Amino acid sequence: MKINIEFPDNDICWENNAVLRAYKCSKDLISIEANKAGLISLAKHFLSLAYATDKDFNHFHYWPETKNENGYMYGDLDEGSDVEIFILRVDEVGFKKGC
Image (cartoon, rainbow, N blue to C red):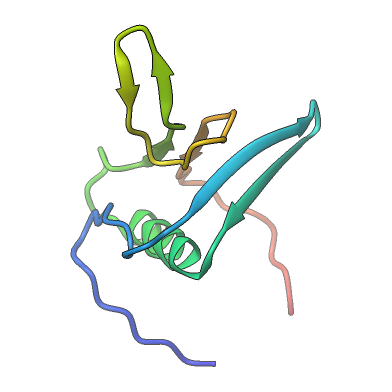
């Protein structure tokens, strides 16, 4: 499969109609649910992070939508999510894997 994608550097836009939820299923397991638009959005975010040339752009932090005494706060993760997701790019060499 070959896919050509063009998007601005440090792009944090979401595809239209993206759905992304994250749940803590147990102390050892987090489940992420996403529709096609949500997966495409995450892929773009991850590629943008992987190829970023700005050293200060090194992470994504996704938080759930919440309701509190101050009203409704929009987040990156859809309503029903109960955990935050933090993705940090590290500049270190891992071991080589083959397909």
